[in-house]
Length: 122
Image 1: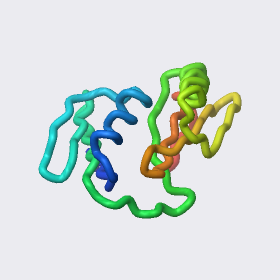
Image 2: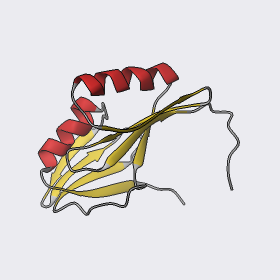
Image 3: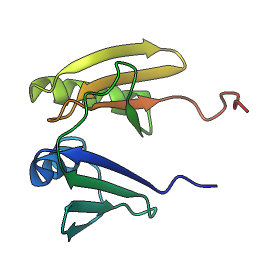
Image 4: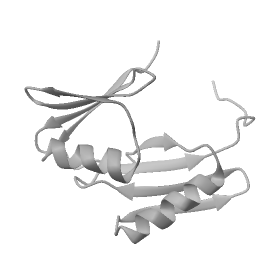
């Protein structure tokens, strides 16, 4: 099995798309649907931003974006601070660097790096 899409209820799909592409740097092809926008990423993953009222997610709920290097996460953190994006969590360890921020609808998004040689879990 393969996870191939994520759909979020958002108040303003255009505003959310701008946050994810312009602020966080996601790339892909945008397609407008009757109920919102789809961002189809180069690997085929579909990120749907659907018009609706976002639920109030439980505290640990988040989804993530992988960075290529620890310095990419640190640079993203500095840039997001400059833009006034709310940070909810920060970690900077030898084998894990992560910042968690809130999007315009309150969803928590993690930008993280960890080495490729970490043990996999079953």
